[in-house]
Each structure stands twice: as C-alpha cells, then as structure tokens.
Length: 320
Ligand SMILES: NC(=O)C1=CN([C@@H]2O[C@H](COP(=O)(O)OP(=O)(O)OC[C@H]3O[C@@H](n4cnc5c(N)ncnc54)[C@H](O)[C@@H]3O)[C@@H](O)[C@H]2O)C=CC1
Ligand SMILES: O=C(O)C1=NCCCC1
Image (cartoon, rainbow, N blue to C red; front, top):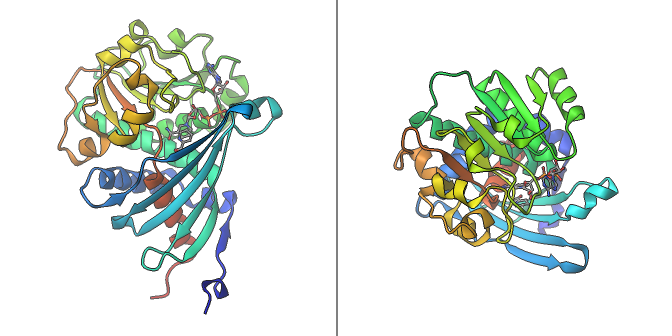
C-alpha cells in the first residue's frame, strides 16, 4: 500500500490569499507565537542554511511542529537579493504540509504568499501584545514602514487593519510612489517620505522591512516609547538599526534561540533579549510603560506550519 494512492494537494497563492485574511491569520499566528513560548508545544530546530556564495544566495530549510494547532510542515526558502535586478522576487519558497499522526504528505503550498502574510501577521500580533502594556498616549497613531517590497506592502496593510492609523508613512531608498498609489486605492492612508527621519518622526509603530545590511534607522529619530517591528537583517552580519537604538530598547524575539544565532542587530550591538514575544502575549512578561520596544523576528517554521494547516483545513474540511 502506498500513501500516494491519495495524492497530495497543490495549493496556489490565490487559494492561500483567499483564506488568510487578517482577521483569521493574526489570531492564528498569535496562537503560534504563544505556543513557541510554551514548554513542549512546538518542535522547531534552528533552520539549516546553505550559502551559495557565487550567486549571493541562501537556501533555508525550516521544519516545524506545532502540537496545539495540529500542524507539521517544512518550508524550503531561497533568498537571492540579486533577483530584484532580474524582475524576480528576492524570496521564493514552497511549504510541504504533513499529517501530524502519520507524517504522510498532505499538501504542497506556494510559499511566497505564506511568508508574506504570516510575517506581517506576526508583527501585528507583537504590536497588539506590546500595546496592551505600553501604548503611547496623546497623539494620533502614525505608522512608519521602511522598505517598499513584499514585506513593506504587507506591513502597511496589516498595520492599517489593526491600528487604523492617521497615516502610514513609507520610505524606500528607490522611492515608493507606486506602492503608495496602490495602498491609497485600497483605502490605506499611505504617504511617501523622502527620508527615514521624515518617515519615523513621531511614529508610534515602526516597521523595518528592508534588505539593508547597514543600519538605516537611528536612535535620535525614534520617538521614546515607540514600538519597532524589526523584520529584515535575519543574518548575523546584517543590521537595519544602529546599535545605540537596539541597546536603548526592550527587545522581544519571535524565538530566542534563532534570534541569538541569526539577528545581526542583536549580535553586533551586544544587546540582551527581555524574552520571547509569546511571553508578552501570555502576560508572563510585561514591557515597561514609556520604553521603546523591539519585536525582532527572524521568521519561524511554526508560523508557516500553522498558516499552511489553516489553509488546508479551510479548503479540505475533515469529514469526521
Ligand atoms: N522576519 C521574517 O520572518 C522575514 C524577514 N524577511 C526579510 O525582510 C526583508 C524584506 O523582505 P522582502 O520585502 O520580501 O524583500 P523585497 O526584495 O521585496 O523588498 C526589499 C526592500 O528593501 C529595499 N532595499 C534593498 N536593499 C536595501 C538597502 N541596502 N538599504 C535600504 N533598503 C534596501 C528595496 O528597495 C525594497 O524596498 C528582507 O531582509 C527579508 O530577508 C522576509 C521574510 C520573512
Ligand atoms: O522565515 C522566513 O521566511 C525568512 N526569514 C528570514 C529571511 C527570509 C525569510
């Protein structure tokens, strides 16, 4: 008997996007982050990276099991920054979903949309968790987004969805007018900024979503008490934020083990973690009122597994 008599499903980007609406995905990723910080709930080895020096690319293998969500999956992701000049996405991936009881493959999912949406949803979950304890008061909420690629766009959308800010200010080193026009047509109050300083001035939530390897965000520009979702620089040699800024903040990781190994912003600044964002979600760790906070994400297999399972269960509901 072969498992392939019941062939695995292919799930397209279109199907994934139809299921992973923010109202569904943000709570699911919140649960995944919480599970990561709960003993025995998640099995998630730090990912394997294959460096392709000739093409300045990296292939990553990311397996994860999230028991409370019945999710077992592996993402294979390639990061080739040079693709931007070729008109190709810089990050491409596939997610293989397996049955948690038998290990049998269930579905292969287009991974780019999962990576895009689950990463932004994790930043949204972190932002909401931190703001329960440390929400700037007084002025209207302004969101800043640095970078206008896949993550920049997704972060602008999800932050608008959860915070309903007065403005979403976007900066990108090559300009971002086309993204701003697109977001405006979707009802996001997006504006283009010509400098990082202009974009982040007075912002209560800042999202760093660039491929920069040297800091673009500096301490004097950031409002004290702001929250930063630090998405880029998932490589021990790269930084998006200057060291003084990182050292001045309370830092929460998506997963402590991976962040201490992969996040250049922490490693190069010699900063310490407060803990994991899952602990803030659970309320066992509380950010200090008035402090600047950073959610440092390097990306986790647990998020991919939970998102993939959610899509699969929605498209193929179990008959029993
Ligand atoms: N933490 C996580 O879970 C994830 C992190 N990422 C990371 O987020 C970042 C953004 O990813 P995508 O939006 O998918 O990439 P993308 O290629 O779609 O967009 C990259 C953006 O960064 C800008 N950029 C490139 N080089 C730069 C530099 N030297 N200085 C300033 N800006 C620069 C580009 O102009 C573009 O606006 C990357 O560092 C990526 O590896 C991506 C997915 C998941
Ligand atoms: O988890 C992911 O997916 C990624 N993490 C780091 C950078 C590329 C994508």
